[in-house]
Length: 282
Image (cartoon, rainbow, N blue to C red; front, side, top):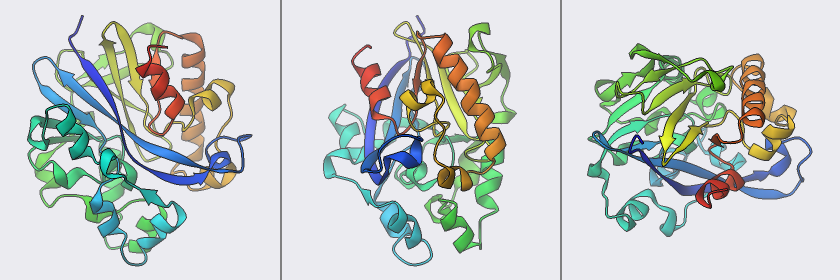
């Protein structure tokens, strides 16, 4: 047993048509929760996979063109879902989180970065370069769901580019995923590239969480049921994907993996059924 533990947290949500995330789903408007992973490592302490929404998101989208983001995707963050409130309920504060792993830089994944001023930051180099390339291009950034103003001033000083870390082969049963980046040098937390949705996008593989393998998959898909059935997002969603070909390749690889390996808990960042099944031990 690795001693790694995982808590699943819903940190706000946006509202959009269900069918935009999965072809064949309803035309009704539903919540897409921003779901984060709070992980305890036996020697490295607490780390977060993404931050979900925060008040900084509202500040960053208060004026145009950034307001386009929350006009298209209206956001709500009840007080009970604020990340600091949920950490406090577990007896923790922001200072207890020593590592923050970023799947990618869309606002619903990084809005709380400034609330963790002491945490070491981890992201794929391709995604870092993507958001840094948005500086000074406010309309283009807003249309891409990126808000450079959410990055803390010392972002570069605290950042580790995950792809500079040691590589470790994934278990053979994880094919077509072949290798990950070893965050702590012990094989317990592996960053796995899942490109397409963004320039890089970093999944997180936890080989042993109370005896269960877990893959936190970011936005490589939005619905686990749709992934199992091979139902891609609707074309307007694919149209704003960074690289549609690579997205389809990643999606298809995960579809094969999750259908072949039912013991794997694959957890997309916006799929309530997947996270509820994991919480309930299903």
